[in-house]
Length: 281
Image (cartoon, rainbow, N blue to C red; front, side, top):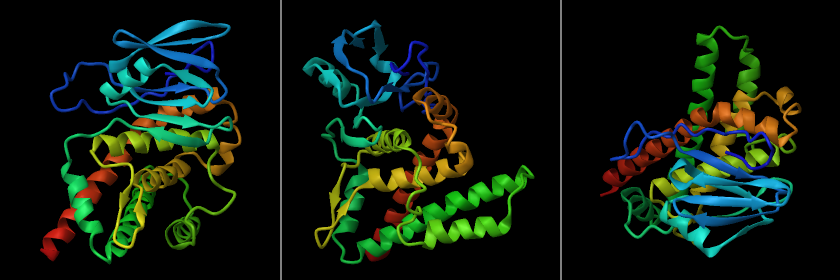
C-alpha cells in the first residue's frame, strides 16, 4: 500500500497467518508513505486515515497493515501511534533521500524464548565468534540456494562470476563493496521488513553482550535481505528503478520471497543458539 502516487502501488506482504488467525483473512501488506510526502496520519476507528494537500483522504484498515515506512514530513497523532502499537505494527521513518532514519516498535511485555536464549548467549565472552559464524553461514546459504535455483532453471550463470561474488560477499572486508549498494529506498524497505520480523519473534531492537558490544538483529537481517535482493535484481537493472513507483512494483514482486528469507534466517538463528547453549550447559 502506498500514498505516494495517484495510482497507489502495492508492495504485498505474503506473511503466513499467525497462530489463531483465520487463514481466509486477506494478507497484511506494508504501507509506504513517500519520503517527500507531507501528510497527517490519524486514527479512525479500526483504520488509519491519511490526509495530504491536493490528494484525496485515504483509509487503511489496521488489520491489513504489516509495517509502515513513512517520510519524516509525515505528522502522526498520538492516537494513530497508539493504534499502530496496539496492532503490533512497527514504523520506520526515512529521510528525504529514502534512507532509514529510525524505527518505532511496539513494546513486548512477555519475554520470548529466542530473546532469553540470545541474552544467555551474549553473557559469554566468545558470543561474537558464535554469532558471526552463524551470520557468515546464513549469507553463504543464501548464495548457495540462489546458485542451485539458477542451475535448476538452466539459467546462464558463470561459475567464476559466482565464486568471485562469494569472495566479496562472504569473505570480503565490509561485505558489500563500497559504492554498489542498492538505492536508499531499498534500504528503508528492507529495514522495515527486518524490524517487523525481529518484533514478531519477540527480540528487542538491540541486545548488549559481554564487553558492551551491541547486537542489532535489524541491521544484520537487513544486510542479509539486501544480499538476496542483489541476487534477484541485477546491478544492471537497478539503474532502471529510479522512480518510487517502479521500485514499489518490484517490491511487490519480491516481498514474499524476502519475507520467507527473513523468517528462515530467524529459525536458523534460533536453532543455532539453542544448539550452542545445550552444549555449554
